[in-house]
Length: 163
Image 1 (tube, rainbow, N blue to C red):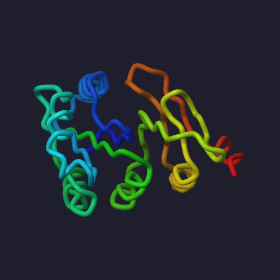
Image 2 (image 1 turned 90 degrees about the horizontal axis):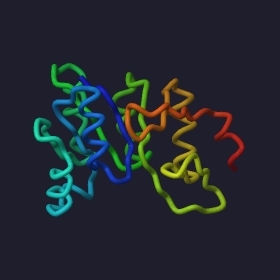
Image 3 (image 1 turned 60 degrees about the horizontal axis):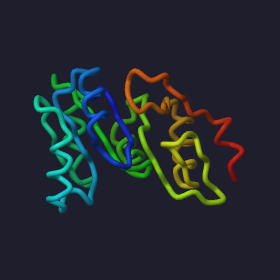
Image 4 (image 1 turned 120 degrees about the vertical axis):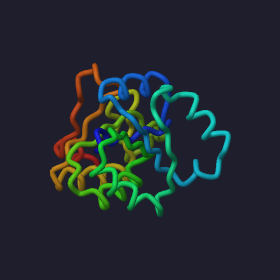
């Protein structure tokens, strides 16, 4: 079963890996990212960040549909991580029954159309558009680095004033 969907531009890193996998008793982490699949150094680095008792698997976006659908029904506790909102939108198209998304870090460059939500999350115009679509589908968008933090919810009101 998928326990958590997470957006993090760093994908997987120490504190996050330890805290989320421990909190949800995660068995497997799926990193869905087209760039990582052909980058052995990045895969090696990401494997160093994962807890020893957790399996780390990498998938490209075009090959993840079957894996994600199977993950809904299996007994393993799974965490799915993507790098950005565009990828998460594709995941939600596959898994519309998922109603909560965790946002860890999106450190986009700030421009005139950016929305700075905190020091870890900066949304660009494209991210904001996807957030609105997800919120209109009833998806809870919550910002937390680790489970012990108080969640910061994203709502339509704070997104509507950004042009």
